[in-house]
Length: 147
Length: 77
Image (cartoon, rainbow over all chains, first blue to last red):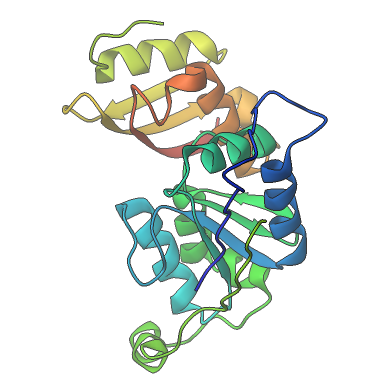
């Protein structure tokens, strides 16, 4: 299971409402409380977009534990996230509360070794060996139910 | 905002007009998915994320919508 932002059906969210915005609060809280968190289309097991898939693969190649949020179930998650991060596209990777970037930046950082550094993990010497050892393990999973 | 299909020529022109001194090499012919290599003096000293933001800002809300994807590589020059 991963994060599920599940608004109460009775509550009426308004994206522009600054004073009462439980969904934005939940996103902020998720970013704050997870050292590494990826907002993506689909899940790490079943990414629904090539960019999300590549970003997940980079994190998994480094065996870095990460939380994942599927933004697809509710379009408001993406609206709020992009408003919060000033970043228009998905995926978005946050490390220690800071936006690191999307797929392009993560892939570039993966190639240069900066990603391992940012995540505080060892750069594996042999990527294929690391990948096969990784195959069975799932990323850090959390569940959050609103309401 | 125009609603017609995006072209690589349009993206190139808008990036180069929107970022002073920028040179953009844009690929992609399906009207939705593009790849751009952008170099600009304005990128000097900026972290990658800020360089990408400068390019994204050129397109505002069109990214993820009319322009489905823009793969980006930026260089300070």
